[in-house]
Length: 101
Image (tube, rainbow, N blue to C red):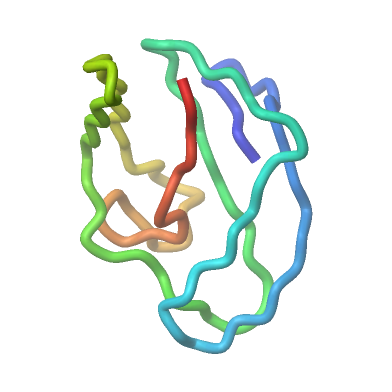
């Protein structure tokens, strides 16, 4: 689920997978791309049911991607206190974000 700061849902996808305890990832894609805007805070969350799964480590607070055309896209990540099941920027369940500009 991706929400922005006014709690309006932009996209959601329900799916299932089996965790085998390895560091393998499971790709979850939205049916349609979701437009995100600069300088707006969004929340990406995953609700996992079942046994513990491997979780991402060595997370970054800021990621800058430079495209071949020299344009830059910057993602800044924040911990979400309260409803985070013990995850943070450094240790969490969402290891990768796929995007295009």
